[in-house]
Amino acid sequence: MNRAYPRPQMVRQHWVSLNGEWKFVFDDDCRFHRPCEIEAWPLRIQVPFPPESQASGIGDRGFHAGCWYEREFEIDPQDGRIILHFGAVDYTTQVWVNGQLVATHEGGHTPFYADITFALNPGGKQVVTVMVKDDPHDLTKPRGKQDWKLEPHSIWYPRTTGIWQTVWLERVAKTYIHKLRWTPHMEEYSLGFEARVGGDLSTELSVEIEVTHEGTLLAKDCYLVIDGETDRRIILSDPGIDDYRNELLWTPERPTLLDVQIRLKQGDKVLDEVYSYTALRSVAILRDRFMLNGRPYMLRLVLDQGYWPDTLLAAPDDDALRRDVELAKTMGFNGVRKHQKIEDPRYLYWADRLGLLVWEEMPSAYRFAGTSIKRLVKEWTEAIERDYSHPCVIVWVPFNESWGVPELTSIRAHRHAVEALYYLTKTLDETRPVIGNDGWESSATDIIGIHDYEANPNVLRQRYGSESNTDQLFDRRRPGGRILTLDGYPHRGQPIMLTEFGGIAYVKYPTPGTKQTWGYSAAKNDSEFAKMYEKLIEAVSDSSLFSGFCYTQFADTFQEANGLLGADRTPKLPLKDIATMTRVIRSNIPGGV
Image (cartoon, rainbow, N blue to C red; front, side, top):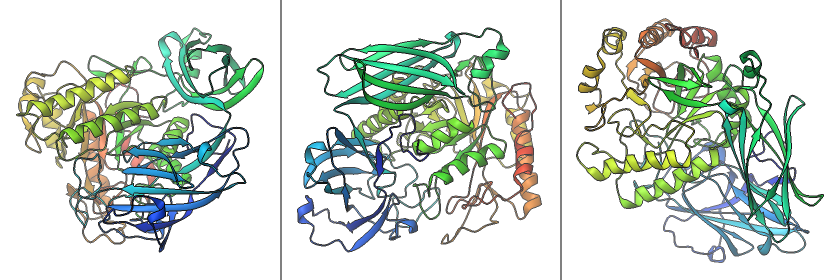
């Protein structure tokens, strides 16, 4: 298996990356409608880096409402099908192959594909053309941290236009495995397995599956495909005593993955073969605690924006994604809150394999309208479908800090939007907790997340320490002038977590091109930075009120200099010292080491 395969939970042998140099042209007035209308291609761009990034070879951060891409490639369809995949393109996309329209998609963070077999020329030489429309001022589209002003301001960053994840081709048979979905049932020691078959369904088909761990066969079975799908429960042999059971359970401390080989068959003939993986683990809420595999688990997360100075939202390469996972673990965290970004599936792959919990959060729109809610629902549904099977993903967060729904206390439609996304998420995935709106103004939610950037650790102790009264806590107003829970939604005993705090600015490694920096508090040198971080972590860890926390933040991000790492991931303090401070344990709840 190629380690950089773009879709790590459904891997095939025959695939080709289309990353690299493409022809490129801006179309600011969106005056072109078909490839044949473009008279010249004045620029060259390195895909998958957005044109705003230096790595793209263009580095233009101006306002551009549209752009076009084109490149040649060679492939012969032979006797099967050729599928063209796009990992993510921001925002509205049309794709032509050899002048024939093959795909349209709206949404800047989720994948799409097209069977392009019908459009291919015999003999091998082909042309793919991509049109992207991405209004830089549109606040009704989910845009996350992408700024709508020319220069990044406050907590928003440079825009990302167009292709920013891998473009690739794969060859499949006329009948092939289209989708896979894994649902672990840790309590029953079983795996829910769903497969969808695409292409020609006129013959009798079956799916053969083998589940192994470190070369040991755990299960082997064959299931009929009925109406293009199969949905079965794979029962594993229960080893009984916890010491043996725990060896097969996935945790950050022991990220055990189960390898799966899947074959689509017509009689004895193998039509398609893919590699996948899954894991046995459960996540749940029990009273005021987060539960991992049926046991209370203390979440120690770090907020991660997922930006790089030279490549913006796009990762520099697969090694950079792996390195980010390794750095979070090395600093003593057992998870990350991916903030306002649907991260590249390769990041989730490394989080699965190396053992790092991930909170997945929907990028926000910033204007409430019917259009924005429709767009959020569509893209959030696609994100959940894409990432449902990753064991590292443990919490879904459709809204953050009332962004896009700013009048939750007074406008019922805003409140209904949060409730609707909460229940939609629970419908699409009943196995994971959901935070309807993280930070404040909670209504429908499984966890109450609080954002508090108080810099004085003694004040944090007074607010959230053993002497604090939860009734009084929820009657107070927190920083930002927002109440913690909406009327009609009192605290019902859910876990309480400090999901943003810290934000200590320490400009040790200035980010090139950034004119000014800021944070929620500031340190002047290593010693002061270390002391401030340590005292804040101790204050939060002292509180029996919290079942988890999320420190702001992982790395400096443009004007925000409040990372534990510089923007290039250089540690501001020795990693072992950060880990020692992060892992301070004040309770007997596991998860701190």
